Length: 140
Image 1 (cartoon, helix red, strand yellow):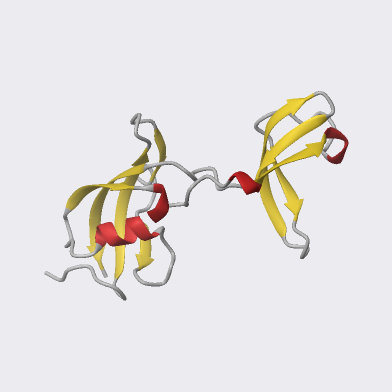
Image 2 (image 1 turned 90 degrees about the vertical axis):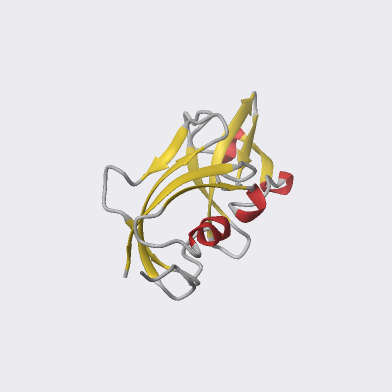
């Protein structure tokens, strides 16, 4: 039976959890995730956790922020005037900001205080340790 290595295409089921065991994503209710290793389609820690496994293997991998979505970067949290945001915006709303080069940047409104608001452009999973229960369905 072939082992997973860079360049191999695999199908896996996964359940992603935080340290507190709250689930943030799972493929169990849909088709398994199909990816080719080594193409940058997955976070590095997930890919490393698959290498060496075979069809039918099950494993739990713990991924530190540095091998997932990175550490929380304070420089990606900005204070802006509420007038720069859409009307009736609320904490938790996801918006599209625009970088100086014109590219869209997804942000989340994290705080509203009078005429000021804070928006965060970090990935929602940045700074978090992630735990994945994985099952290799197929090595293609």
